Image (cartoon, rainbow, N blue to C red; front, side, top):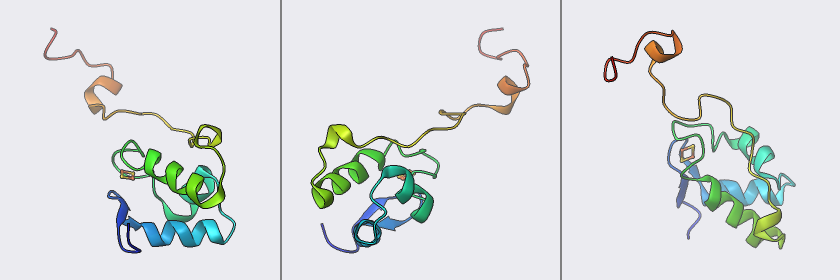
Length: 93
Ligand code: FES
């Protein structure tokens, strides 16, 4: 990986930005998410979350299993507004 390698494609966050944030003391998934917005894009961190956890683990020496994933807020999956409004699903009705 280079400094310019994109880790979070949704928010255009690079490996270098994440490493600098960790070196500044932002060493949890939640802190990095809040600082750089990675994990807040369209995929809600499904693409970048594990990569960021691996970078934190490598940089801090903390075991990967001890790095907590950030909280996810609903909707966790793309949802049609009609479903949220309670309208019948066109495919099943
Ligand atoms: S790749 Fe990071 S939020 Fe989608």
